Length: 175
Image (cartoon, rainbow, N blue to C red; front, side, top):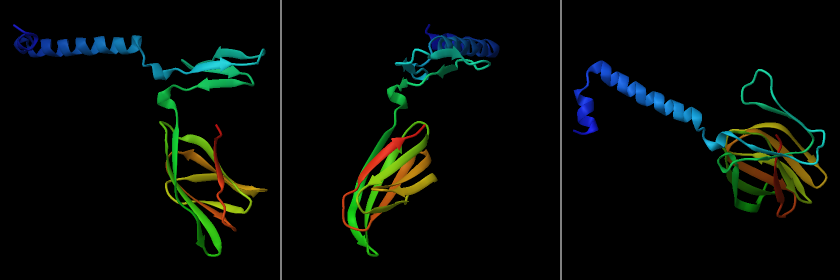
């Protein structure tokens, strides 16, 4: 007699008890052996005054007070940004436009993604596709910038310049 035949012979309440016991065993195993991506390795470098302590009234929370902290994220939490140039220096209304399309793959939104376009005649960055919220944008000598808040998903950028040039694009994560 195999297990399925024995299970079929049980009464209704014995079947419920058997299923409950199996669920209890699985729950205990889940508590004893958590998945490895729930922890992050921290390296505190060159900070003799660093203090690491458990936060009060917060289970499994560590509070770190230091200047230099390196957080090594597990591969499951890392972000990946892919960008493709659709066209470069396309004439449009007396200006030259470079269109970039991409996708930011991440398990959670990046709080602030600063995008900088460096070039001699770069004038502005325009967001085209996707859902985005800009926290700041502006122009400085030799580059323009915009900061995308809660960044995730699809990205479309128009980079406008007054002369044909290939701009240098930089993406900086600001936590």
